[in-house]
Every structure is written in C-alpha cells, then in structure tokens.
Length: 246
Image (tube, rainbow, N blue to C red):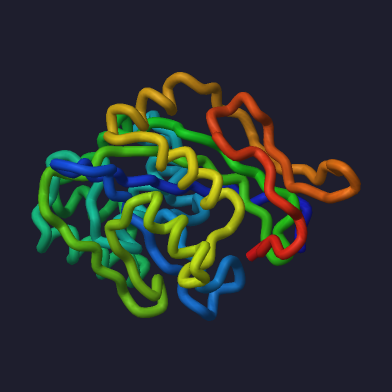
C-alpha cells in the first residue's frame, strides 16, 4: 500500500419524498474490486487526468467533474448536467463512458454542459487505516433531477444500485444484510437526521470542510476509531474490534 492517498470524489444524490425521509442514490461495489468489495457506497471514484483537463477548461473543480462523471458512469443518473438529458441520452452517456470515451467529447456531442454549482461540498475523508488503498475523497451533495429515473448499472462497474433512505441502510447493516465502510456509515448517520435535501444542504453549508483522518483513541482500556466532534457528524467514535476496513 502506498502512503500517498489517491484523490477521489463521491456524490450523494438526494431525492425528496412527498412523505418520509429523502432517498439517496447508493451502489453496491462489485465483489472483485480491490477496495471495499461488496460495500454499499455513494457513486464516485478517483479523479483522473481527463477530469483535471476538463476542469481547467471550465475553470471548475476537478473533484466536482469527477463526481458528476462517475455518477453517470455507475448509475446513468445525470446530475450536474445542463440541460438535463433524457433518460435515453443518460444511458448512452453511461455506455460510452464505460467504453472509455472522453467525457468532454461526449458532452460536446450531446450539446451538454456541466453545472458544477449544483454540487455542495459535504465532507472530505482521508482515512489512514484502510488495508488495501487510501483515498482522499471529497463528498458532495446534490438534488436529484425531477425525473423518475431508476439507476442502471453495467456489469463490472457495480453489482447493483438503488434509491434508499439512510435509516434503511443503517438498519440493513445492523441485520447483517449490508456492508458499510467507516466513512459511509458516519455519513449515513449524519444524513439520517434530516427530512429534506434543503436540510442536508443547510447542514453542509454550516460546517467547515477539512480532511477527516480518523485516529485510534483509548477509552477506559478499549480502542475506538475517532473523528473530530465539530464537523457535523452525530457519531464520532466506533469500537475498533470488528471494524471492517475495506
């Protein structure tokens, strides 16, 4: 494992409901992946050189570009694109991205642009305890398009994708029906406090963004993984024993 963290980006897509808590777009990582195989996560991935080049052209943040691209590639849910494409266009974009087509070229071919302002920074995670790979990941939140899109996955990219509530995912993990890595669990606990996208975005805006690198802390002779208490997360410690590190 390299000591240098890999720059990455993740997008939390939020879909408000008429009644009840909002739904979140989550994917199940394929079982053969080197990092967090089989885990439920938010769409995302590493920031590549093409993301940086497109961001430079647009005078935008490469992390936002990567978060939008990865979400389309993994789920065919188009967030941060302007105008909002049709479902057929989104599926075509997904197929071409999986085939390694240039995101910049695809946007031009479809007459689309990026609306990076749709993404609000939520947190930045830089864990040091992953056994396989370390990532420096920017988490963003964005409102889902007002279209009843169901996520679509392509074999090899993800094992599945769905709209789920934060509380439901946390309950599934407790029952042993889902696997979560530490940053995802802490994020879901924070999201579960809110009843709408507006509340989530207000939460994001009210807390500073700084790298979160969990550390081991001894409490009464027991070891806990700990994060800062002032960054908006309601749970800041988890017992080290049995912690799945991906």
